[in-house]
Length: 155
Picture (tube, rainbow, N blue to C red):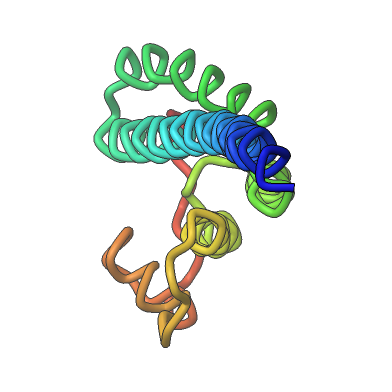
């Protein structure tokens, strides 16, 4: 009986090591995939917000060349959001584009603000007590609920 235990104990230990190594490898690979996807999502979201903001500012000051140069960056970021983005962010981005996507009108500003809140939610930020009026104030220096629709420009 003791002779059998001499062979069984090391075999059980080796099997445990092999199973542990398998699970560690499996979860490390899964974690790596999740990390890479998160990086791609965050980069796409940041590039979209940067391009949209640059276009809005350029439109307000009449820099047509800047608008044109930023449009390709915006299209690239939207494409990456369609591929890597969370479904809620994609839906809110589509709604922003349906509203006009220019940040010129109150409905566009509200839609963009909702998109920003969705991005915050999907990247894991706590909602806490953040209101769309606070975000619109930070982004556009206006409280949307009290703001009349601005006049459209030719840019």
